[in-house]
Image 1 (cartoon, rainbow over the protein chains, first blue to last red):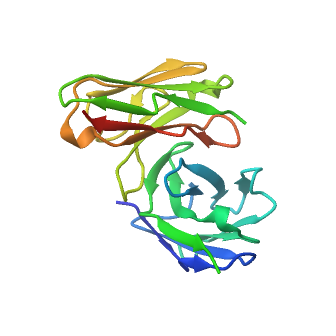
Image 2: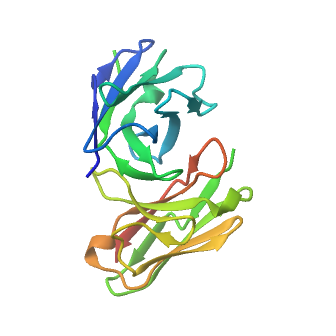
Length: 116
Length: 108
């Protein structure tokens, strides 16, 4: 059974960089696409971007200028960096696997609050 | 980008009743690549339907998806107590992938 687990700081200051890691267990990160998705409190889901295990990426244009997603196949991990954060970036951040296209496995999510 | 509009925003029904949830796209969803997710408080979404009408592994047959083009429907034939949750649609045929704002299914 594939499992995903997000990790990283729960509090980030405005203008700084949000950094999260997703660790995949129970299966290989190879041969799949992997996404980051977020959900502001009380709101809907927003796709941030995805990465293929080879390193190819696709980002949501609304965040593209601030987002970097990378992969480390040796550790079975992929990561998210979102720079110049503001309060509007406060959300639960999920990592998820593509099945392809739709998301069949999700992490439990991690709340990241942007506040000074 | 494709905007997905879900209706109603909130649906109040009783166990045993039939639920019909709508997801309308602002333009045609390529290949009907439309998925439905269920989300309970404090949990990650769980995929129910993909390709507009294919049930994901382990999903009970009381859940069904239909539709094509721009209009899609999720139907729950007979509501069980565990079905009360938020349901979101997602299109993955066009980039960027987008989600609807969700329909909250609550107990009447």
